[in-house]
Length: 343
Ligand SMILES: Cc1ncc(COP(=O)(O)O)c(C=O)c1O
Image (cartoon, rainbow, N blue to C red; front, side, top):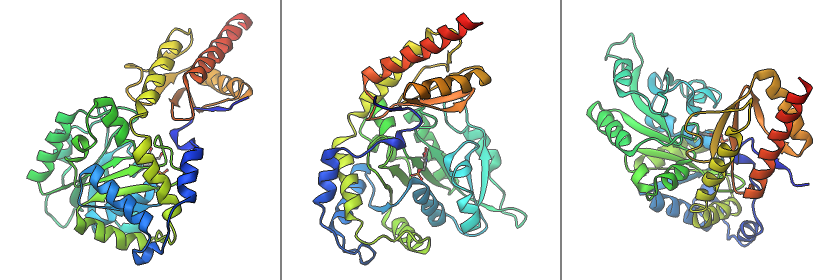
């Protein structure tokens, strides 16, 4: 029985074609700048995102960390979402390794940070305070796509105040595909963008940080400092090139599958699908917490993996097809029908 893993889009496995590209990759020592495949990926990523330069790194966490270390210095501050990956889910790396203070703010319902609240969080130039240097947004944020006019306002806002603007664009291609625009329409507003190749795009490893030549030169130095200088990394970069060339447009299928799953689950008594269903490849459902634990166990027995308790995030990706969506919906229904009978 095929295991259907809805816990994250990080679980995708490289396809035979991607593995073939990895096998065929020309390699060299990337720390010397001599890996032709890494160089090709970095050039492709920079061109695709419309930035001067890009840097191949091992993970989204490292990419965001290098961005923060490159925008900010010891004693500086970045403003970020309370649930932002760069704040909450990266081990406090910027503070631990860079002496950079986060200033978290609650996200709005649409995944944006209210610019009036950002304004009031900016610290005056006074030795009592850290120096506010950067605003960090996330897109998609919990599967939500930030509106383009908001991004434009965020750019105007940060420029007028001398702040940098970084995007944790782990899933920026999901945002662009949802909006039906080239990804440059999203990335153009940011000074730097971190993109994960190893989520919906299906590569086994890797992210790219894109920005100006000067910023990427700094980030390259920091990458070495944090031990992220890889050597014959072309075998991994080849998967990234394959992902960028082949797996972007198909994200629309993941979005459609997530919407189909939202529709199917919303008819089940005991399951509350979060408002707006699914914009991209994520949907959130609410199930009474104790019951959600039993549901998780039941689904596991049916070869379906989910995580969370109470509020559950379900993620579609390239290893999930429509038949899998139907199987998940049927299994959830079975669980609640059996629970209703037992009650
Ligand atoms: C929004 C977001 N940013 C960054 C990351 C970090 O990526 P990685 O797991 O490659 O470190 C993740 C990972 O799930 C993420 O969801």
